Length: 115
Length: 219
Image (cartoon, rainbow over all chains, first blue to last red; front, side, top):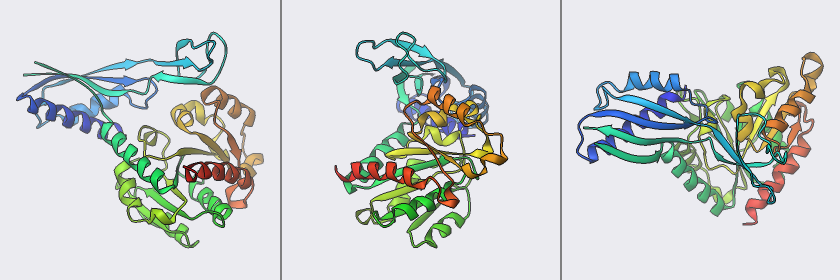
């Protein structure tokens, strides 16, 4: 499971950012995960619970928001932007199958709440 | 108190991948990342690709495996430089591993570096290595429905090889259905049917790859 490595990075990044601000305790870490990534919420939470011990995030909560996939039609006369799943990514307006992904592969730390 | 960070979690790997790509571009070396399940024929495909292109291009291989150096030895037996990366349990290659491996090669003396990723259809998809293209190899015995189960890897690949097509009569592989789901997932990706160990279909794939190598050399 690649979630373990990612969770380590989430904790390390948050701890470093909070310590830079003089914080001593992390309450909450908000992350965003795009629907087209292969990261699973349960696996992230499981790894987070296991890895936060003995850090200033030991009592912290991990809040995961998921972002749906969005693409923009590349046909210049269309340029429709639309949400889609993993399959059937053709433009719902003109049917063009070649589209530019604008959202869905994110994996980022948005906000850290700390004392 | 609150910090608004807005920082990519894979940021460091992405930074190193950009550095790798700059390094490969400035050396005029085309880098291909090879993705597949364990046993789909990554090493055989690499050996067939070497046989098809070695008269025209100077080639090296970086082998990623959890343990052992058997793959690197197979490549070296053909007189091609090979570096083995043992990820020690990690299920994918990352940019820093690739950088350490290519630093042991003389990029100025090479046209093509092939990265054989760890056999895995999930984890490698999130880790850019600085490659110019990713090829996904599906082998016939794995079944035509693999893209339904592992869509991400079929979506991020620029090109797909359908390997072991010589075994088609033995398996219930629905090629039309496979091509249909690929059209829905990744319509731009060409599909090359191949039987790497028999040399079947290698030429068309090699022609595609040679055109891409020329594109990087011309920069």
